[in-house]
Image (cartoon, rainbow, N blue to C red):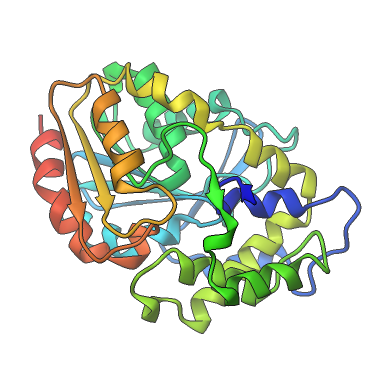
Length: 314
C-alpha cells in the first residue's frame, strides 16, 4: 500500500464533523506557553502572522516544514543572528499564526505574506531557506521574484509528487496509525512522537517537551479541519520541478544522507539536475534524517554557512 508523503497523510484523516482534540488550549494560553520576547504578531492579508526578526546584517528568511513552526529553526537562528538579520515565521495555519479567514493558503497569498514581512525587516533582497514541504513556496518564490533573491538553500525537499511505502514503517508507527484511525480529526501525542522519531536519526531530540509542543500546536490547527485540509492541498509538489528550472540565483541543495522521505539518490539528485542556476551545489549531511533543522542543526549549518556568507553579502 502506497500513500502520500507522511506529513500530508495526517490531513487525509480529517473530516468535516469531528470532535475537538482532548487538549485544545486557548490561543492566549498557547501564546503564553510558546511565544518569546522576540515574538511579534501582525495581520497580513487578513490573517494573523507570528514572526521573529533577530540580528543585524544581510537578511535571511527561514521557512519551516509540515506541521512544524518557526521553533524548528531555533538553533540555526541562534547562530545566524550573529552574522545576519534572520526572519522566520509560522506559516498559517501552523504554529501561533492564525488560520486565514477565507482559508486562503495559496502560493500567491504566501508570497504576499513574505513580501510584507521582508518589508518590515527592511530587506529588499535576501537569501531564502526552505526545508521539507517549505521547498514548494521557497522554490516558487525564487522562480517568481528572481530580482529579490540573493541565494536559495533547499533542504530535503520534494521534487514532484512522492509515493511512500507504508510497509516500510516500524511496527510502533503502524500501531500509532491504527490507534489514530479510531479518533478522526485529532492526533494523540504518540502519533506525533512516532512521526518525529521516524524523521530523525538522533532520537534523543524527540523529548517529551517536543512531543507536547507538536501535539498542542497542531491540535490548535485541527480545530478547523477545513483549514487544515486546504493548507495541505494548496502547495502541490508537482509544480516544483518547473520552478527549479526557473531558479537562476545561487543554489545550495543541502541533503540528509539518511532521509527516508526525500531520498538523496532520488530527489536530491533530481533537484541538482533541474536547478537552472550555474552556481549550484549538492552537499550531503551524514547521519541525519528528514527533519534536518531538528536532527542535526549544528552540522547542517556548518555545511551551509560558507554558502550563506558568500551569497548574502553580494
